[in-house]
Length: 316
Image (cartoon, rainbow, N blue to C red):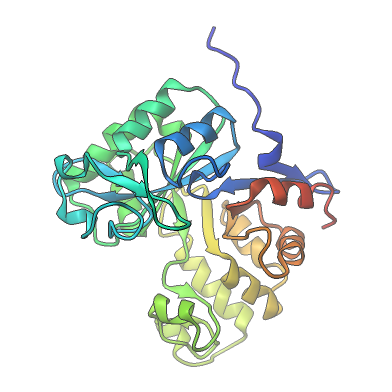
């Protein structure tokens, strides 16, 4: 018989007062401060814990394989420089991860996704790993097939997230892959903030950052606008099992009176993940209580243990 799968670590989930489970997704595999983010050691620590969920990022290399890295540029998070997509698999062999605090080069190599897939295959467990695909351009079909082959032995352990066009390409090659829907192209950030500038979207008539024609002028209520926008976006990836929404966007939906915002996702058959909420940031307990009461299923965080303790028994 296959070995029994252990339950998720108690500090990677919590149950509300109504006994609803909320899962905590360990952002960039930062379960502890012992290893750098997205490192092979950090990923192994998450899988062996085992946490309920974790998340890592990948970017396509020029010839083959994918580099596990949050950004598409090597600097400042690694010992190298330049865009990931310009490098070959051989070019990145000696790359080391820089420490987030201080920027010192560590002993940890920047891993390849092929190494991560082999690691996960060797350690049975319940951990579901979000594979955040940072490439925005359509992946070439040979690279889509390459990634699908890597995932085939461990497809039940990964859920893919990225632009909807790349999700559909992967599903065309392997319809059994687990995929996500995203709200790319619809967001919110305060006027003049760094986040608003980074998102590079115009502010539409309803106050959201949105270039869609529906945002050009007000023709109805904010609730109807959001239902129309999300109703289309959430169906762009057939068979998706969950959706990932930036925390500030979800909170602004609530600010606009859409108290049933989570229902828009649940009606589409999607679990709702909001990212990223960390203990120690302003009003983090209040913000956690608010999104839990609003019905989110998953919270992405760098501080899962603190959120697990704060969320246990939380009222809804």
